[in-house]
Image 1 (cartoon, rainbow over the protein chains, first blue to last red):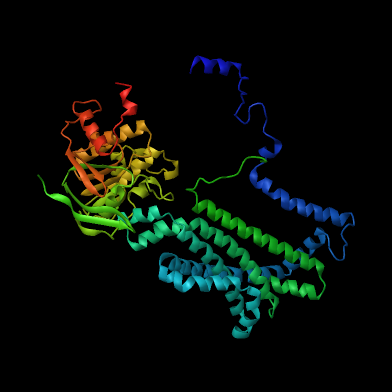
Image 2: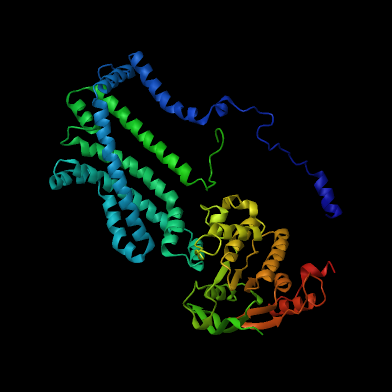
Length: 289
Length: 245
């Protein structure tokens, strides 16, 4: 540094210094000390509390919007009668079969379209077209074609899941790092090794997004499928409650859908933890930003 | 002189209008360590990709050993496989009389000094460690030709010095042919039997390095060779080094 520059530097105000260790001088707040699984429960519990308080204070009309306690009693009744297990069991089975079929179909189509240009040319547009068709529009047609048995319900769910899996897995495959594929080529990896060890694991993050979307689509498809011509399932429970003006059962059905939805989401999160443990992605800031 | 394991004749490769390789001839003898220098865009990487079998659209003739391995500038490890699994990725079983794939992979990791990193995830390794895993992945295949595409380009200077020693030891022990593509003139002189300079898609200079091992910068003849190579690369002003002398 020249003498002049040093002189100038000295006349400038001293640089401001800061402490960059987060916790120095600041204790961790109460919120940060609560375990995260408990923290997650806070917002659903808050909604439940608002509902309970609304009912207790008369803000919600008891006939049109029964309090949580009534819904709990109804749930208990249906449970002891064995009805709840029957309907939830039937619906869950439909979703499971449809999801397994849909995942298989979606992955196979995504691999065919993702790996080869011929596959892409033959499949991609049709899948994108199918994606644009609402399930809802297919429901009456499927019933006409396949009758009112399990067939159309499973097909409806399978289609929704397959499309969600296909769209995401396909883009995941196309997003696999070309450098890794080249590396595998220089090592003369077999085609099967390339697919199972490079391409599919590379597409896994996208596949799991597809699974998440596919599962929510599965429960939605189920509602459409079970609204018409059925005597078992949550959708049947719902439409019967609507006809008979059983608002407590209607609310219970909503709670059941919510619980099943969150359980599916938790399962996918668990899968992500198991399958993507190699990633060190952004996990969010502690506290508020 | 031993038989050539790489024999390229009249090798040409164009991308659209641009002639990247233009009738290149190159021989590499068995067990020979050849360093290839060239400015950016001189066709070094294109040549290496052709020899690696990644680019099959070239004209001319080229013969390479069946067993060859590449180490890229970026280690290109599978992030979802642990270090050892990366080393033995796509490694064929050699038969009943040879050690298992895992044992061979572990031996290769031992050789590059990473015995205790077998179970590490690639994202948890430092740049130098990841590159050594990548080197182990190449060595475990016991290649007759090792292709190195600026393998130390992304490493810091201290790690790079360690890697020079490691690479030299591995080569001295195994004695496979090596083609080492680099920007770094000193690196080329330190490691190679022979340095070739690529300009305008041809070999414009081909020089044996007759310095005895162990070599270090400042040895007799080192600077002369460096000046020749830099001149061939079109770099005449040695700004950074003049002051220290």
